[in-house]
Length: 92
Image 1 (cartoon, rainbow, N blue to C red):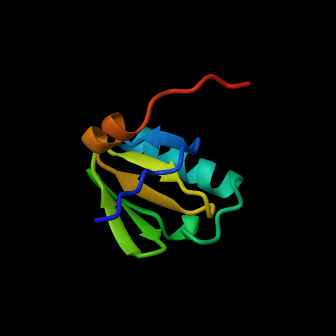
Image 2 (image 1 turned 90 degrees about the horizontal axis):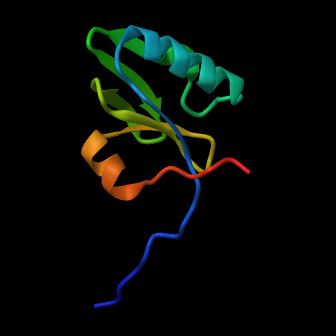
Image 3 (image 1 turned 90 degrees about the vertical axis):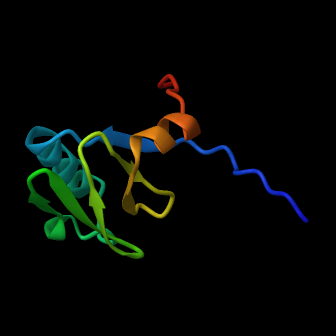
């Protein structure tokens, strides 16, 4: 069976932790010129944040991370998976 390795890429992400981070995430999406995730369509229904992704509506729960993808799209990622998949990088 062929095997593949994920290409190393640097991503931007913000951890969702409730209303304050929801507002920060929406501002971030709009500042990025987000059109694919429809930042105006992001909804907050305590405690869940609903995000329009390229694959439909996805729910982010507190402690999930919102990731900006390589196509300027946004999607949630569970905290456990995020911590296993990503590590901090220093700004250059």
